[in-house]
Length: 329
Image (cartoon, rainbow, N blue to C red; front, side):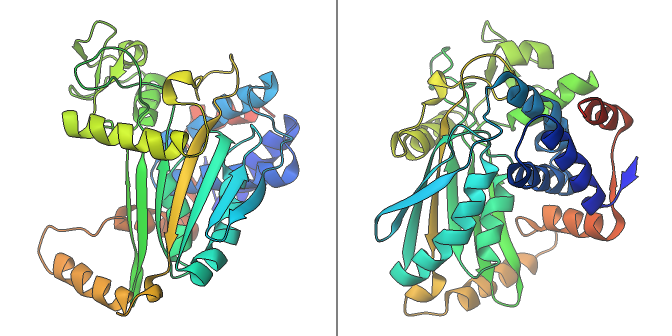
């Protein structure tokens, strides 16, 4: 089915409202999922709707929760997602952290009692569009072992970064510390497709191309021991600093059973004008050097181009995805 982005957001918003989610939260979640779909991040897009709705129905996510913020120190904003979806907390961060960053030069956002962070590129880019650089860290339910171990300890624990570039669209980097995001394995499982070797291990620690076996086993860390070490760093920044559940304590984002995941996210927002140089002009020089070489693509451009095309031309949504969404209404 072909839909405009606005029609897709209206459809998904209505599905969440029909399942007891308050309107402002339903709109926030729908916007995040639809824009993830538009960016080509299908594992974090509309395929998430059944799992998200199932968790609202079971009470694993509080669809009536209202996130709220406090400012314990001049440069620090704490946001309680109140065991609801993460996106309303991100909306508060995007609204409040820029003023703090411009006032202090840097701002720290600490989000706790939260849920799935989705495509974090879409969150950090919202700061870059306001002329600010942003780093974001999130932990997730455990799916990776410490290097040398077999016990699920860390999540895929993504990192995202965005910066404004003078005269250009922002540079955006978004990467999971597993070889691929867990959402890609979920999407392969839903489609009945295999996964490439190197993405995951089965429960016995053997490489697997079966997404069902991968779901029972371990995600492979990106870069081996280095990726596992970075996952530990993110675990500390996202959960340790925010007082959230560590990955091994968090329940699944995919299932409607169990307690709330109650994971955390940390944002560091920087005013590029706080120093003595024109940072965005200097960053533009680096971006131009990169783009001048054949075969080099600036980070974030693929998703930006895909979203721009979707805004102009709409989305083609697979029939089984549309059927699953409409069934929830």
